[in-house]
Length: 272
Image (cartoon, rainbow, N blue to C red):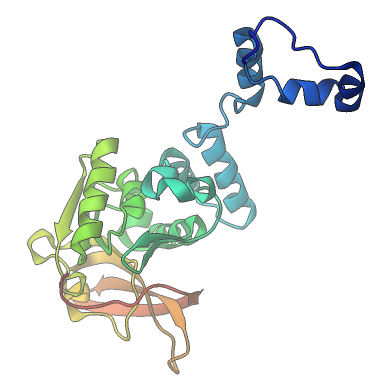
């Protein structure tokens, strides 16, 4: 027998005393609609603090800035891209932490600090430093499309290559939702670069190998800069490698520098 929602349920005096008011509340599932609505309002997350909030992204950027990322152009780009849209919904709560997250097929989305650091290095030399833009960018390893989205607000055009068809398709869906028309996605072997779009002012890789593929250097424009992870000297771990394509008195040369240790997925040939 059910008790009407607007009529208090009576218990024997002894039992009522033992249960108390809070227990009586639990034993009455048919509560008044106004009470239920009030509870729902109390439990709702505060306005402006959801995953789609600019405030959440700003807090992430502030933490990155405190950790040493100082390029205002890169910080602004990171603040504009909704990183939670590029990870599985089960991981969305971690989207604005400085951590890499799995995106399937043995791949990960890089830490925001690593994305920011590599793009800031691209800005630190070559044509990008003079123009204030990354120009035409070649990205090796689209993944879920997050880094391409960040690059898009800093470049004239982004050509991004992915060798895994499911990830290429996922990135296409993610980026299409953001309507970023300056990004061109290529399904292909990243080690070959993209000769049809060369030369590129900036090249950035999200996978590390034992060497830099000759195609990347061949497709780097004079004055351009390349940033990629590579196996460290001695074969222990990976480091960020930067290559500048310099031209002096008509003579072209490549200058290589090594930066801090990193950890990226392996660079592989072929498509799957």
